[in-house]
Image 1 (tube, rainbow, N blue to C red):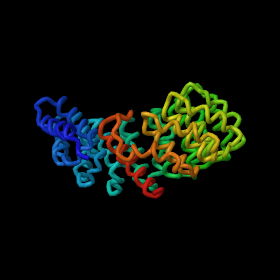
Image 2: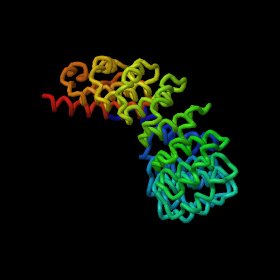
Image 3: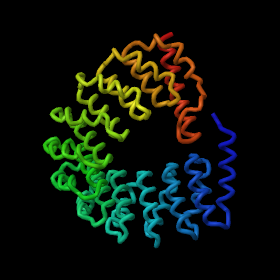
Image 4: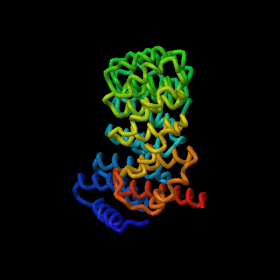
Length: 361
């Protein structure tokens, strides 16, 4: 469904691409990306050769997010740009565009003098699954910049680099929280259950980011011996931690903790509520059907989607036909980040509900 206001906004932004003010050009490019303005890819691509580095960088980033694979060659030229931000943006864009053909050029940036560029190169190589650069990437585990180290451990997890597990473990004690959390994430991805005890120590970490990934990793590994330690965090002040605790309990099949999980159905954060619904669904906790069904009246689409999925899994969705019918064409002001996202999520929900209703009827 086309949005006239959105189209008008895009047209106004395209006009600003020709502004004599570089700040206006850079801002216009960025906003076109947020509006998913794929129809203006060619207009944006012209700015890859802009005289202002912020504009060039924004153009590369936007083209990456818009999936402009036809611009890969032009973006690759910016990998050698004299400005750090531009090189970094180009690497990120090529990663998003899965530009494997340019892996050798991106690989050269692993030794760039600027840590932002090194980080972007690591992320890009991970996205395009360039495992041939694992050895070069792993050398940056001792990089002086914590953001680089964090990106490296995350990349090793993404690339399923099990051969580097023992090099990742020491970083669970890194002074930087990004690195500690990233190391936990990587070990979880690599299913390094032999190091679950070391990961469990991070459940007491002072940083929510670290605790979140420690909980996630232990849950993914099915490290049941740490259930009691993890459930203690279900009242953590961080919504991200509470949500991951619910998810872990679902993965554990921890039926003994359904009461604790069910309390999260009244959490003030939709992320947590949806994770609680997911866990209760996986545990087939049908006794909480009525409480889950109440989320059909929520103003948040995450709640509604999770509730519908749960009621379907419980085999009781036909009881709620009248409540879910409205979602087949619902245009309420759901709490989402922007108009484009709202339209997409509502459309997706509408399609799913229509299919459910046709199945029932």
